[in-house]
Image (cartoon, helix red, strand yellow):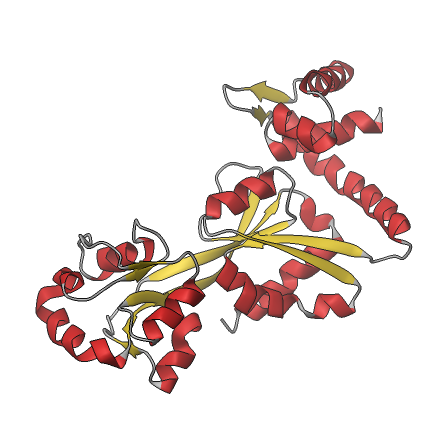
Amino acid sequence: MDLSLLRTFVTVHRAGSFTRAAALLGLSQPAVTSQIRSLERQLGRPLFLRRARGVTPTTIGDELAHRAAPHLDALVEITEAGLHGRVGARTLHLAGPPEFLSLRALPALAPLVSEGLMMRASLFGAAEESLDGLAAGRHDLAIATARPRGGLLTATPLCDEEHVLVASPRWARPATEALPSRGAALLDRLPVIEVHESLPFVSRYWAAVFESKPTATATVVVPDLRAVLEAASFGAGLAVLPRYLCEEALAAGTLVALLQPPVPPLRTYFLVVRAGTPSHTHIARAQNLLLQAAADW
């Protein structure tokens, strides 16, 4: 059996599309289609079911991918090691939320640098961007706040993130006076800082704590939670922030937690890889380090 056909097959299986696989392989879509048909003729079995959008592997296709992918990955690993001139020289391509990667993931992965690994991080505010890039082969590992669907990607829960409603001491007193009785109406009285016009963090908090939807408009919109933290600390308004991000400001008194709900709103982070790629030693090592670190998060 031609190894190039297997390589094309595994790429299609991971990408979930002839078009995406062709882009990853540097081939035309007809060439990829032809190679898959040739492999199917050799095996005498269909490997994919053609859908309106992409392809779905048959049970035979899944079995072949499970058996072939680790060996093909090992060959690629040997080849790349030879190209870099030393065994273990690898680059880990990581994707995820900018704040979480900056403050948690990258520090946890720092020991890999002394082991000869290079890292490239892509920062995305939306989970879909990280997952789409991972599925298309642009990343090796993604951290996302949504569990992917289908069998192309494998997700492992990493940690839960507690959200806290905060403001500077300037706003704390009027806010806490209004919260018990007015709840969502609080937003009519205080300026709001958010990462997007749709108020994703405030909306999630309000739904969980007040069982309502916020009707306010953001006063300050900046697509980075670290900037939201700074703006809130200097009195620009209230915000909903992950506790890990604002705990130092809370301890220092530059921010105040406006409410302590019995069950605080949580958001789960998932560690996501393409099916079969944990056989890559550098990806498996990165996964293990992140999972170990997450025990303290």
